[in-house]
Length: 292
Length: 66
Ligand SMILES: Nc1ncnc2c1ncn2[C@@H]1O[C@H](COP(=O)(O)OP(=O)(O)OP(=O)(O)O)[C@@H](O)[C@H]1O
Ligand SMILES: [Zn+2]
Image (cartoon, rainbow over all chains, first blue to last red; front, side, top):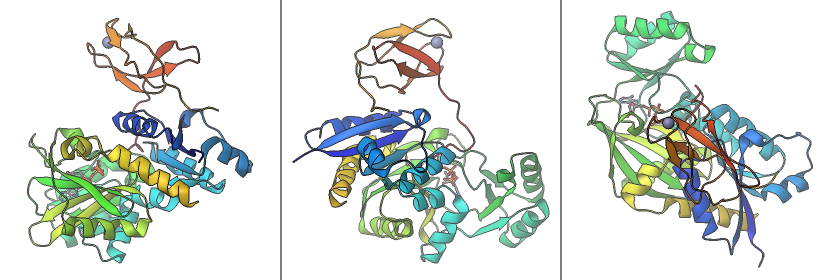
């Protein structure tokens, strides 16, 4: 049997990308694994599909941290007949918090109450209905960047006035109820049809955000049926793939999902749970390549 | 276009502060290394012949995330 050709595209080789490369090398008998810095790539949208398949194989793992690069590169590869993990719809929808909220809500998955507005005036009205404290986030971005908690209208005005000076994208106001939860949230990793591991992210620095990029601490959380169920229901609308699911434990509503990550970081989940996520990812790609 | 290669390397000088930065023996082109002295992040650029150069890592842009 000839080895299955599988590729990874990236813009940074972080701990995750390196671990995936190493996991693939352990399977070099079965997998011809290639990896490409997206910054070196260029395409013609009418490139020959078979030439592209010769270079990349039928399956490409998308690991670009830049949302715009990720989405456009996925689009061109899909256009040339490659199966990208995650698929273009997942990349677009999961990369945008509003689109994610809409999909979750339609799928009947518990998610924070969310409003959207486009001006200061509209935002203040929406916030008035929602009540304070509330959270204002950009629709794209991660690591808690520019995520603000506002306790009253004055605080909201000052956040919005700052954003009014920024790139148009930041003048789309994604507004959320502040969910009553313990000082922690949950990051679960879904590979294919299974929630493979999870951690608590616990805020330690007094920051209300729990992001480990902001000094939060991680702790293993064994996956039970309830967590697996909600993660699978939450990722289903995005199609099969590899996802980081962010959840909160609401005091009155139980587990609620606030975000889906399509190019998930997993080094903390990997080290705290001991689950070999890089190998599970490689195995998933291998199985997928076998079906095509 | 070709897939990345693993190369055998040892250490190099930090362009910012001249401290020694250790290059892992299994370093990969594009891998992020951080100077132990000044904390600057660099991207390893590994040429076909195996020479390493350190490039200032691309700074985190607004659209970066998970
Ligand atoms: N509606 C909410 N109520 C209470 N806490 C929230 C709410 N939304 C987000 N948080 C908390 O704020 C932090 C950042 O939120 P969120 O995950 O939405 O931002 P992010 O920038 O996408 O981060 P990530 O890197 O996790 O993707 C997290 O600790 C999360 O638990
Ligand atoms: Zn230095």
